[in-house]
Each structure stands twice: as structure tokens, then as C-alpha cells.
Image 1 (cartoon, rainbow, N blue to C red):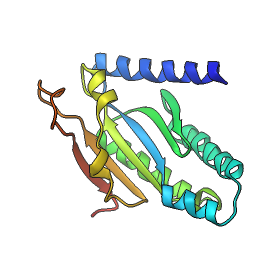
Image 2: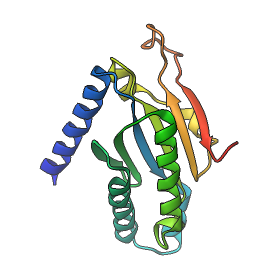
Image 3: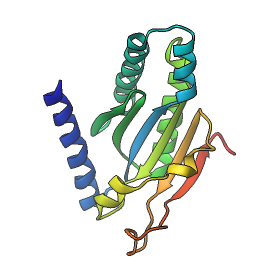
Amino acid sequence: MAVIYRFAEERFMRSVERLARWRIDAAVLHLKADRNDTRREQKAGIPDDDIDTNLSEAGKMAEGLVRSEGSRRLGWGEFQFVLRGSRDTLVARSIDLLNVLMQHPVYGQIGWRAILIRVFPGDSQRTHMCDPGYDLEPVKAPAVVWVEPYAHDDWREAQRYPTVTQMWPNS
């Protein structure tokens, strides 16, 4: 399992680096299950292994739908996919993905957020280190959010925040 995970991690990182270097329109799609929903399932007595299996299968289904160039599982209900395309194209694909997940009899019981972090042209580190953090707290699932990494040269300084825009549903 560790070898497979390491391969996925390396492929993911290389994909972001390549797209940034070649300045290809792309984003990292961070697909995140709503923690309140997974906790609700735990409180309802659903075993953690069953919840994990459902989340894992939802991630696999998502990967097949978005046709990613690289992917990784970050945590229990968190997945990332490297996607090529313009902002508008990727937002539309993310909305389609969330609609499919919401219509599924099992995966639809969980709220999902699709957070698209733009691959910063020429500098993959800005993408990897971009943390929209607190700006995402008020965004309730289901939602699609676009994140632009901080664009100025002093991006490593404290208090340099990305621009976060909720794209769907319209706020």
C-alpha cells in the first residue's frame, strides 16, 4: 500500500510541476467530504470501515469522472486531482461531478465541496503552498470554489492570502 501511495504522490507532484512549468491552464481539484456529515453517519452507528469504504469508492468514482493527470488521497474524505483546463471549463466539470455525487444513493448522503486551486504559471510551489483555509469555513456543501494563489513576488511573506471565489451555487 505504501508503494502505491508513494507512486500516486510522486505522480501528483510531477503533474503539477509540469503544468506550472509549461504554463498550461490547470488547477488542483480538492474534493472534500463534509465532516459534519461523516460524523452524523458515525453517530448513526455506521462502522468507520463502511464509511471509509464509501468515501474511498466516491473518490475512485470522482477520479474516473474528472480524468485527472494525477491524484492522491489526503485523508478520510479528502482527495486531490490535477486537471487541465480553463477556469470556466474546470468549474463546469466540478459542478457536474458534484451533481453526480449528490444523485448517488450512498455518496449523496454526504455533502461535498470542490475547491479548485489554480496551478500558478511558472511556479508550482505557489500552488502546493496555497492555503485558502479560513476563507473556506463559511462555504457550505455542496459548493464549487475557485482559488487564485497570491500573485505578487512577496508571496512567502506572512499575511499574503489567496483570492477565494465561490462559483456555485451562487452566493
